[in-house]
Length: 410
Image 1: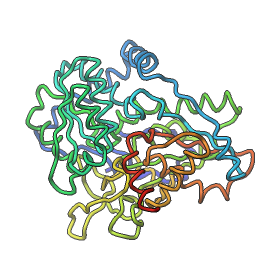
Image 2 (image 1 turned 45 degrees about the vertical axis):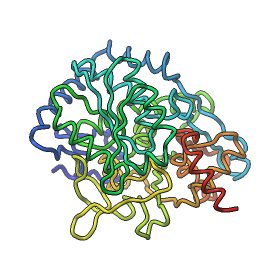
Image 3 (image 1 turned 120 degrees about the vertical axis):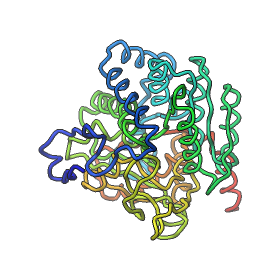
């Protein structure tokens, strides 16, 4: 496998990952049953053609503008800024996308690719339900059959999104194996794909899976960072000093981070779900507690036991409750270009309340993990500096969990 790129190299070299084999340094690849290799090769060829097809790209951007509602605002969080009394805080408002999260950027791109490839049936996995809703939405718009796999525990936590998917015409299949969360839903979706590979397109919702999926998700989500760069320059005539985003698999984070990776002066921070504490067994802090291994088709970091079995993750946030991490994030951690930290449930829920009361924005619990890191970051910042947080989703879907948590504290 290729050697990793050191942190110092980032200051002198263009960022060119993944390589032609689908690796980000030592992470990535195609660890799948042999029956799926031709499908992945066909997908990669089709995607690279689409990436260089001006008509495809124009159509993709047009749908994002006319249907998704892009570009999304970059909102100055004036009261949060005043609360901390340091750097200016801006929120990149992916919560204002159609369906309420960044997930639809990727779903639109992949369903257009499925059409280009002549596929008639779409399958997907979902945890918090936002990717499932986004996939069901684009399938409804483009008239495609849609099957969504979702863990039973996540279906309980995210009943509103289950109802939304079904209203949009998707078949939502409950997964009762394992922890009954995202990992298990992904397992079932892969089994379906192996069985129906000829006519089925698998839309993976995060920057995980076998090559070319991590690259595709990043490229379809990079519009977040591209818009941020342009909007901030217009507003402040400077680049950000800090970037913050939550991550489970990591698509919203890599979407924000990617356009800024070649600028070594920007401090980039990914925030994982610490659960009940990153040093406990009830955590989803993969980079803090994980080790190298293979999960869902690629080599990355994952939570595993000493004998190599996947450990059950835990987070109050359904969308971050995943035992792995995208291979590009694994590389950025390994090369020390990006810092990865963990926030526990209590810190995240405190951030939900703070952002709601100060900014009139109820963030998704996933997003709140990134906002919570301000408690640690802001004392090190200075006035005149700028912090951008990716507000990856809105909290409507989480109100049952938020209400239950708050009621338990009274």
